[in-house]
Amino acid sequence: MSETFVNQTFNAGQAATGVLALNSFTGTNIASGVSTITINGNVNLPGSPVTVNANLVGLVGAGLQGTYVGFSQPQGETEPTYFFSVAPGGLSLPVTVAVSAGQLSTLSLLAPVNTTGNISAPDSPTIVCFASGTRIRTPKGEVRVEELSVGDTVVTASGAHRPIRWIGHRTIDCAGRADLTQVLPVRIARDAFGEGRPTRDLLVSPAHAICVDLVGEILVPACRLINGTTITQVAVEEITYWHIELDSHDILLAEGLPAESYVECGNRAFFANAPVTDADTAPDARPSGREAFCRPLRESGALVDALRERLSERAETLGWTLVETPLAELRVVADGRVLRPESDGLCARVRLPADAREVWLECETSVPAHLGGSGDDRALGLCLAALTADDGLSVRRTLPAESAELDEGFHASGEGHRWTTARARVPASLWQGCRDEFFLRIDLAAPALPRWVDRGRAGGKAELRLVA
Image (cartoon, rainbow, N blue to C red; front, side):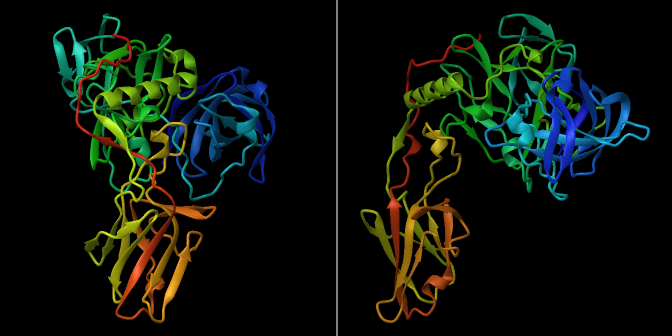
């Protein structure tokens, strides 16, 4: 990952000066951010150079030289805080500057600073683009985004006709990227928000904001609405993103769904048609202030929770339903052979040859965050209590959930349990020394979570009122 700052300006409450020592930022002065600070440079590893224009307490000047030194991101914070060492000039000692696209707080400034030399700077958490093939409403009808040109007119959600000022595009090779959640597209299924909203499946970048009217119009990033049913993040090998800029931020109609236009945020270097293209960055910056948005941006809170609940209700009218299968359709795969174990309650067993080389547990998964009331976005399969191998003669060996041998395909253990992913490896040490054949016994600590299943599209009148 990396972050690109192109004349990125941080306003009041978004910058602070101080001293960085022993990975702690001290002596801060948030009030020093009453004036703006502007940073230019591509930040990857600590030591990345930047230039700074500042008018802060203890740091005044234009074209000052600085280096990126690290970042912090307290739990629950969506925006990282970046730290730079900036030389004021002359004989003065360098000053450490902390900046964030969000509002700096005591919590964010007191958090430990990661200065590890081989850890890349995190991306600011928003990507705001349409995928190729997306149809945008114009006075002439629906036009694919890649067929639009600067100067063409689009129709906004309010019905206004506005000319396109700029179009950016970039193709991303998703293979091998560590930041997949920040680049893989979010698919919004046809009719997810109501009949014809959108008119067909719509792919947008994770942080592309959708405009919804609940008790007033708000913008919500698509990634905050992923529910495992009508709104999902999909795996692709390659994706081309496009963005349309008007003279000011506004709401376009993409496949009939109100979605934001591009807002200037210092990340034009992401796009292939920019004067200078940075191939390492992602299109994931936001303007350093809320005033640039045409509607209030909401990423969490009561309104977003209410929206998610209504999206779930809408999904059920479209044929999605929750099913409960305590063993999550467990399959045991031994050297490529798929076996269905016999079961009794939360216990299952299967007979395996003692010379088996690889044994895997495969099952369906569910994400707690998609069920409501949880922020846990892990894909959870079986809630394992223990695994036992027994050949009925000389070997009976049990691995409890807390065993460190349960590694590949297992989540971290909890008290008396450990969740699997969709595919978990059974350690070969479990059946070592067994004769001829053995029973593999799988004991669960709790049933698998309910999971969403599409029973087929159905009619329904539950809709959300969007700007249109």
